[in-house]
Image (cartoon, rainbow, N blue to C red):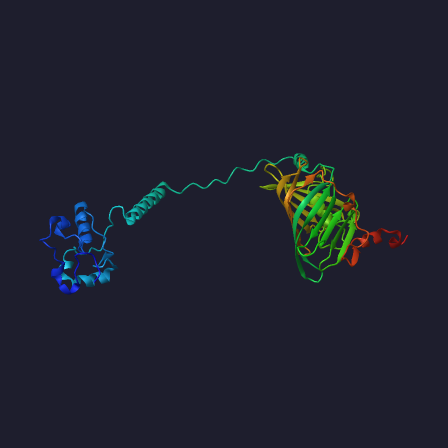
Length: 399
């Protein structure tokens, strides 16, 4: 049998385990145990632990070959080797670990945690966490408008965004869903001029939308092959056909238009904990006054617009825009780099990401002119507010 030097086979009986008294003292371990014996390690530990007053850990012990054995195998070995089993003292149920053993460290940690918990209970309930500073006092409406307008884009020259990303999720009139991930560029100019061209990874010119002082338009090639257009003076009227995307109001969300001063049409303020709501209205000869849009402005510096609600005449949201990640525009004001647009009635949404806006770029002014001929891939052109112009014409009124 392979084992440490000096160890003999189990067939030799218990006498083979007795220490050799004739061996030199230099070859003997503690308590006269011969060095190299299978029990040298256990006897040394036992002798050392008797001096320190610590019992050995008997969870795992070694046999003659140095193999770790559990409790059951250890007891069997001791029954077989009666003389050898008498060397170790009887095992106690509650054994303690040697100094420096990891078990001693964890016991000290558990003891300290128990003492800390007892001290906490004795001192009463812990204090409530701080809820942050109280909100600032409400500001005057004129002060809110002045602060917002000071941050709006004040440049009269066109601003160019060379790289934008757009994710569209549109639902058509038949209830079918159309999802598009597009990239492109954009040009804006105060107060409502906008041009955006978006390309698909497999095909260019998938979506184009624009706006100028009088008109707005939208063309989608994939799944629609249609160009829609209308006039700004009819925006919000019930006769106007809905568009998959509303280019007339997208220009207002980019910080190009200043907030009107306080007057008969508003704004009317509602104060909340985190923001102020400014509601502007419109006057209609038939329907009278109704709320047109709502701006949610931060009550904390730097007092930015975080949400815009565009409402219909019944007060229902037609378009909701969330604005985030404002950035400086070459010293011309702030603009939101991330916009999330949602059209609840049409169950459509759009996510717009803008890398940056640059001033001084050479832009062809014709990008702000509505195309008079259908772009490539467009099979039909629809004027969304044709019913409004027909109702306002003399022929329709009977004159």
